[in-house]
Image 1 (tube, rainbow, N blue to C red):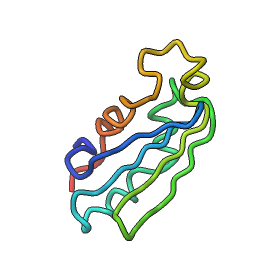
Image 2: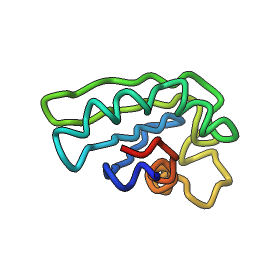
Image 3: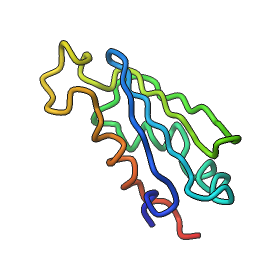
Length: 102
């Protein structure tokens, strides 16, 4: 199934770094998401875009995971030639990540 079935997402940027939050719709889905959406998996999923490290931060009190992806935006807003200079579409792309059925 797609990650979008159990979570939603928000994206931000700072320079050449993208920040994607994955937020569980239901508190009971948080541990399931945490198990299947790892930093390694996200790095592999975005391998054509992300050139640097991916770090995952866990926020269990709000049922969210925050992924900080370095060297992910083609140099940042003032340097990239990408159409999506802020990387806002990355949150939609993240929601297409395949995870196991519950």
